[in-house]
Length: 438
Ligand SMILES: C[S@@+](CC[C@H](N)C(=O)[O-])C[C@H]1O[C@@H](n2cnc3c(N)ncnc32)[C@H](O)[C@@H]1O
Image 1 (cartoon, rainbow, N blue to C red):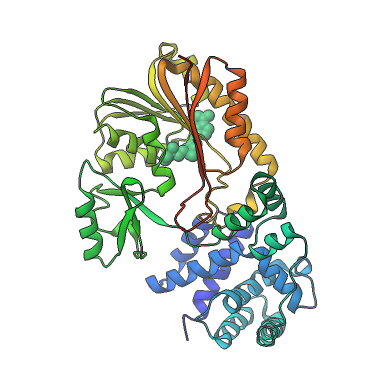
Image 2: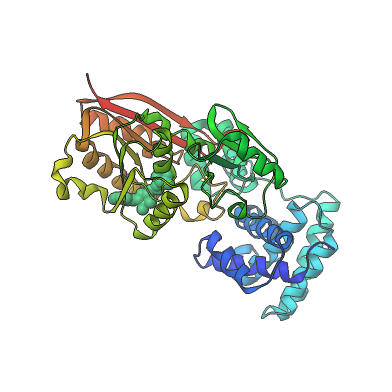
């Protein structure tokens, strides 16, 4: 039998924490800290718990197909336990049905769900019986509802995506949100070479290869036990950065001696990329309003041994008030804005259930304010890049369009939306290059 009762119980505990609002990564970390698991156990627990979180809609649909009581009426702890059992039965090929059922029932027996263990047994057995006779729940006829159930995304989001990109593209993106995300590295060419990195990875039995059109990128084809424990990580030979994110810093075409502002910089993935592109020979100011995230930026600068970056904890929209000498000062500015993250749902299992239209509206207000207040710091011959990791047009091209209408001395040099719609695409990202009109 693959992993036992305790591993499933840990996965269930993660679901309980996430349902009470905790981020999935943190919930995983907290629960794993309670037990002594092997790396194989951890991989199993991660797959099971994150899979259940992603497939919440789909699993609820199956509860309604196999239980007398609708999922909305189930006690929450029981609903999440059904998810643990059903996900194994429906989505994990290598686990015998009997193991999925017996271990899930055991959780019920050994917890406050004790009196409901018979119900757990009955519902899971019913699911396997229905699977065997191909009695599957009928998917809704309506296209949006069908994708919302099948790919387990909130219906409001699917409806929005259809208006943005049409049905076919929406379905491709929705499917990609349920795939395992790529693990990409950016090689720190100031300390090593792609060749040396490939050798280090190979010595550690990790298969890796180049990424199309990315000079310093490497895609891992097998997942290491811990990326941070690989030799080379602490020496700053590489960092983890998705391929789409690696596309952003070069858009600023930084050159040695440039004065560069990274206005939303922490944890510094793109700041360090900018420094790397000009071989640490420029004046880079990295600011962020989050002190905790700036600590991570500091660690990254130290680990990668970067000297050209000064950092400051400040609200970027107030920078010019505090430092009026920065008017028209910077040759290059990056605004990697806080956004809904709708391009990175594959990476963040719980994010799809947390984002709402209201939070997007609030973010748009912040994004507009950042642009308005930061542009005056740009040198008249300079370049500003605005980027996000979302696929929502009102945070991207529509926002830039509106901004340029209100600032007719500026123009769009370039813009691109990357959609996360296939295995090679990476995260969804948007970037626009803006300059003063010549
Ligand atoms: C998308 S993240 C930046 C990621 C970073 N550029 C990187 O590549 O590692 C957005 C950042 O903006 C910061 N932020 C949000 N509002 C801000 C503001 N008004 N001023 C400065 N930083 C802000 C957040 O704390 C967060 O660290």
